[in-house]
Length: 323
Length: 220
Image 1 (tube, chains in turn blue, green):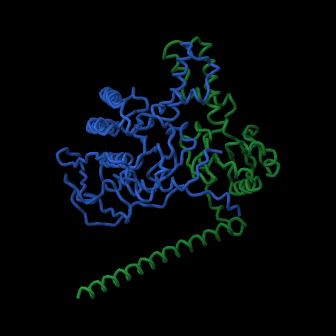
Image 2 (cartoon, chains in turn brown, red; image 1 turned 90 degrees about the vertical axis):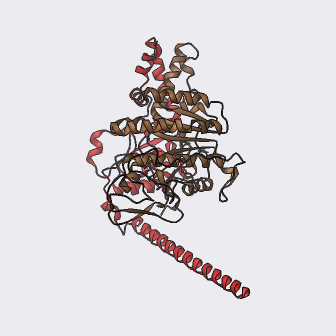
Image 3 (cartoon, chains in turn orange, red; image 1 turned 30 degrees about the vertical axis):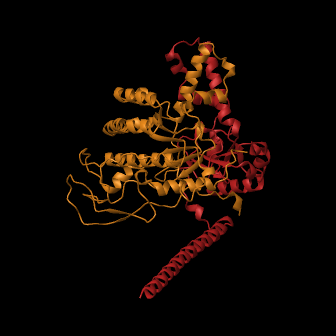
């Protein structure tokens, strides 16, 4: 038996949910005390140690979003020196973490909630993750918010996502400025609704000089698109006589990729939630030596404990960069 | 009274600690037993006594890629044994990748040791359908990744220059994902997108496997 050729599992053990039946509750517009589903026969109980960003007893989820009832959780940051969790080593923290935020719809489906509630819960998880990254000294976080393949989803869902993105950016804009967070957006933004596109341009421009932390949001993005647009930009430089066609090299392509908006364009760690084992056309060029961590948690359930687990796993690995 | 209370607390804590240790021990014992059972099962499958893989439905797996870390890639006999297992299971097409190209350099010896193995580039459709135990092998290394994309891009740039490209529309017409895929095939990177990618080594990354091809590949 070739023990040295046994593949190490990339999947982490299930830290997710257990389900048990509860009495039927009439379906109506109301606040949920916890994960009680109003119309289905399920309750969700978390295993100890599996923290959920949006599932404390004080959080409420609505069947239909209502601004006056929805609890808004402001992004809190500490301006003190990064207070690292005990289990982590400061010297081997990743500088750039990328996340594929998968599992929002499944999370909502498990609870008998509309898909929109899943995405809203996902936004809360994202806020938590941004706070943790700032707290623990991670310099760049790239999140895969909307893939170019997602345009093929139902129109209602796409419109909801666009409006969620718009409201999220508007609400947090002041917070980003106050906390010196730089926002960058990668992807084909020409496909976004005009209002959202303008908002994105405005936020990117307003925060471009912030240096404390960078949040890169991939919207209408695909790895292949990134490479193709890099080639288009190089072609324009070739046309303008700035470079010769034969001078095109890997490093030139890398400079033109959209992820070149950051000091650390190559993620050290990629986390994908919901147990899927694919990178789904995300940052194809940039992930050559990125450590991959596939978490079984659904994205709205991905909180501090899950992030800690991913970071601990990262710190235990030996990275050779192919050498 | 206080002494009694404190004494009771200490005994209580000790009792809880012992219960915690016992639970911990029970869990450790359970996982240890599971590990032993897995090891025995693996041995029985490897030695051919237990043919669990006969029930596997391999039809979904049209193309398998295997990434081996360069240090491990020197163990050619181990690689050959892995390929023989894959042939037994019924896997038809495999791409072997290591960053430094060690497997590429050893391809003659690997092909020689396997029966009914041919290079992916030389295999034709008719060969693939005839023999159930036939396997095609593709050998890839780091230059087949980023360097190949740069070469493919150069091909497109030469075409762009020849057409006297001007304007954004021209760039968008020439530089598309489909054209890039075509250009990659023209520079020799003809392999399809793998359905599944195994990574062997201490790291959990694909070590520069041709990224253009792993958009939706399951990675284990």
